[in-house]
Length: 211
Image (cartoon, rainbow, N blue to C red; front, side):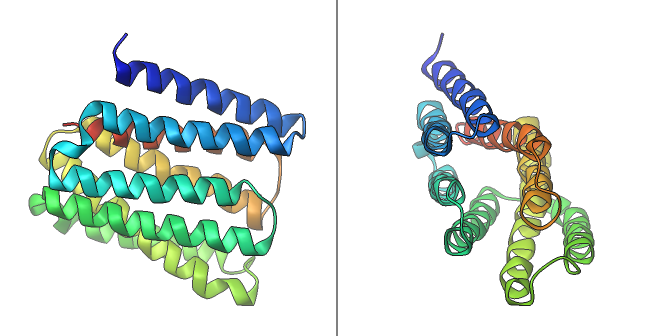
């Protein structure tokens, strides 16, 4: 098995551990396993050759910010949630920069409106259940992740990188579960859907950084 494959396996095992620990209400193990899973996708990127080009090195920085956000969101409380949200918003902005460095071609003309529609739809769904003091932060986050979605898909299509396209879509989709957990109906099903989607998405992006 290649080094990338070993780190993919490590990430998968850590995600399974995170799901089991949250089901059995073991918060310390949950935080630790999420940290291992996040370090796993960073290791996947490094093993895949993410430092070989400017755009992929920038993308590696985004993975690092996402890992910091993962750890922050593992803790409960509004302050740590805002720290995690900020880390993720910055990660999405850095991802967008990486994809723009790589190049989006003419596809951005099509994906940008699609990203805008996603942002508007997400806002319309969330705005009624958001606390007033959270609307600005969540609104900014929605803009950041929608921009990442548009640029990531455009880059993936331009360079025939299906793993990148799938990874970006899965990361965005995982936020639906996060939003339901935080502002809608907290339940284990949100973790069961959200965690695998998120870590598979980040791992696919990590693998793409080597190409």
